[in-house]
Amino acid sequence: MTAARLILFYAVVAVLAASCSAGLLDQLIPSITSKYYSHMPTKDGYRFELKEPNGSTREEVGIIMNPGTPDEQLVVMGIYSSYDENTDTESITMYTADKGGYNTQYKFKKRKLNSAALKSLAQG
Image 1 (cartoon, rainbow, N blue to C red):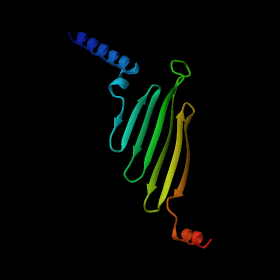
Image 2: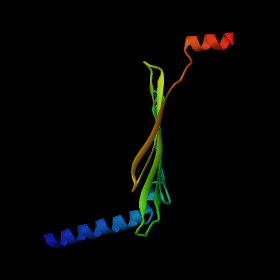
Image 3: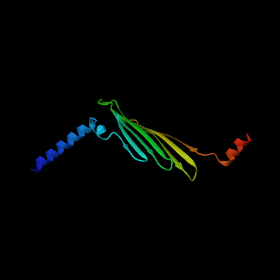
Image 4: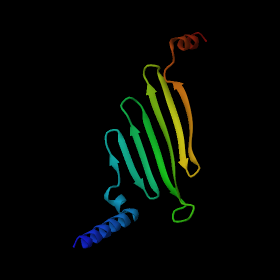
């Protein structure tokens, strides 16, 4: 009797997995949204967004490229921004992840002008 239950369990898991991959999950849960977080499944992947109260943000898109072929791959592209109140500096990181690896580009910038910069603008 235990073997029959085990087979039934695996059959149910297989049906659920097939249903999820067929898009049933997208119909049941089209998006998840909270105060700071949003996740939206799309036809070929997903879209993700996070906005924290301190001003930090993250946006990401995942797309399945060449579905059903030997070249199928998940490509993830996104941007992450964080703010340091102590140094008044924002760091911005753009990234891509695919079969070729994880690649980033980043930059740092001051959000506000300091007093010396404001003086030079006023005099100029």
